[in-house]
Length: 241
Length: 372
Image (cartoon, rainbow over all chains, first blue to last red; front, top):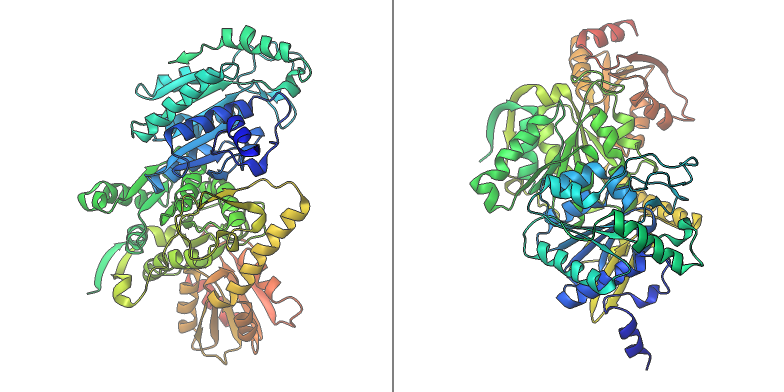
């Protein structure tokens, strides 16, 4: 009885042939993707979604689902998905990016997509670090944090994505979730998808997510949880904006 | 009925894209190309434009414009952009990806002065960038136009070539052609028997004429079927050197089959003339005037496709020539391609006339012909 077990463990739209997935043990990406997958199943839009993934760890999701997927690079996922949506208005266009791709190299495209109120759903995985390239500083890195490129501690300023998006687009759907609260995350995913399916405009979800490798907590899930809930969730407000 | 109109080059290009059935333009304002954006903005918002489901987006920059273009084409829409100079530099990122995945984007490129910001006026300095830019091996099709009429003819043709062969396809013009006004015959391509090649969705396609992995290099697309539905996952980041090798060899294989089918050139003047002028684009028009003015002493070879380059035709043209005059509004861009094509061919004496980012008058070329 393999199939029922698989159905319980994974959303239906997950591509089982590509499992086990390519992410590190304890990584938050699979949690975010799982929540997304369940939302796609619930809305029955597996064949309508065009899924765009960025460079960095998000690219490892290029065949996570049986969903038409395009892997692009360096913060370009947002404009690519804008083009996909403009090109095919029936598509449910979703851009899946990390906090480096969204807030550094792709910031111009992200902000302007929000200003233009593009009818796409952007999911940003926020782990406070450039993970795949080896733990460099991200625009979300908290002050004083030691990273590969801030050996003496990061400087004082960092970006709060949802606040920024809300500032430029008063009608967008904007929220922040966290991987430690999977059921709430599924609800947010559903709401974001529904917003673009209804043609209401830009939808933006940031998810606080662990990078156990670069946080040095790969063998300490308790520490991972502590950072996520004890530090990040207290600095970055959860819920709707 | 074809109609002749007096109009600016950029309007000719804007109308060519519309006549070709393009329904989407993504761009960023830059001289000398902005008039095409203005025309499309107006057309897309008009009653007819709305009826035709036209899309116009002014992007945040040329990176955004070119990646939106890529996405739009992957969604199966006949789409294009226009750019120049530093904008052309920024678009190389997306064009490289299009080269890798065989995505048939179309761009009209109106060369301006270079390097860098330089002037907004004119040059032929974007030959190499357009043909070989990015971090690939230069598998993009480049047509170099010379007249306002060609802006229209090739402005339509590039869409068909792009979708037939699935390579990024560029119309390389310049600021002079873009901004000059003249008489042009506009026509409906269907009325001329030109059938537009149908487009196809890379993403969310219901039914394909041929499997997508016969177009996109195999390591870059994973296809799986679930409940009778085919899902395509496109991969831009490869793990292994061998995969990258395969991608490049598949692209080259498709290119090598296509190249002889599309190479184009023009010759002008007495085929027995001992002086051969090699020039492309608007400089070839100057060369023609110079050839007329010097009484049949010289002839012209003008490559129309700069990539793939019409090498066979060039070798034919060079035979019998005692002197070759290479004239271009750049330093050694066309000339380097010509020399590469003539490699190991015992060639005639070569005279270089390189005038980067400035126009070349017929009198200059005539003088060179007289002294040859």
